[in-house]
Image (cartoon, rainbow, N blue to C red):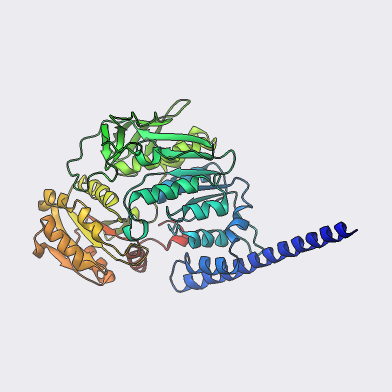
Length: 486
């Protein structure tokens, strides 16, 4: 009899705790949705504060909401390429008919994920979606993965990034390793075979692992001021050698000492040609067959992004024709070579946040024909990284090679003068560099100086991107991201 009473009391407590848990989730959703509405009324994104408050009210709200997804959650993490890869996967899933939830603004820490899920929930805390595609900050990855128990993880690369937050790349690698251990049983991983740090990760969750990599002969990259973030073998610390290198430390690596080497990719990009319209015709070899896709996004780094998206889509058993249709219609996501039109001028915004990413953006820009107009916006808020020493590892010296085509160069943001000094030491004439600390004025000046039929490239850090994009929206260029892309 005593045992029955104890069991009954335990059952009552469990039922009470469950009701309390659901009540907290409801309150978190209601208050979170209210804050999203209010912040957007004020012209803000509503990606940080609502999630912070919702998590304060209901710490497990992301677990509760993501647990309702019939097709589970997909996490995309790594230093560079998260936003574009996640956007491509979302496009493929939408084309396949799935109701997809996606943090398209790029708010990728725990509160950004919570805000995304809260926004997608009904007022009864029921999630209106089947699958979530979530780009996740590398440092936040282990905690978020434990909360939402993802079905799949895509790891793009590991580079130095925000040294004040992450330290050196070994810390990022360890963080991704811990996050992979939270994969669901029967889940899968998609790993960049050309990154020696990612390949060294242990598959402790025993989930299926798919590798992707490039199999192309590309012209050698002259500027390697930043060198490679990974120079030695992760196993024996011998200097790595390469049969082919694409940028930074990504390529066909091997260790001359312990025989550690790039694994054979399951998904290979074996052909890339640019047609008359400027679109890439890609040949991709999957484990079953070869497919051809038309892909409109520029840059070698975007070749990795599309290959990662294709590998993930195959892991989800999505048919090739659906993948091809989705990729052909792909558009640059929020702030990643994102285009706008103004008075016959094309404005292209590309986030820069670390040496490798900035170098690849510059490399892509310098491949363009015609006059170059550049606006660089550098902030040093927490989301950007307080330490801006990385600017000295970016190959801004590349700009000197096209000095005759540089129509105007403007720098802005909280660290505009630091950026001006960096460009001076890169070889630009100080008289050619205009400093305008107010980013809204800088945008207007840069557009005014750009000639009709020419392009203006805006290269901002993250918080500068958000501010400049609001300025562009106020000028009638594009829409706030929550109203749809562009």
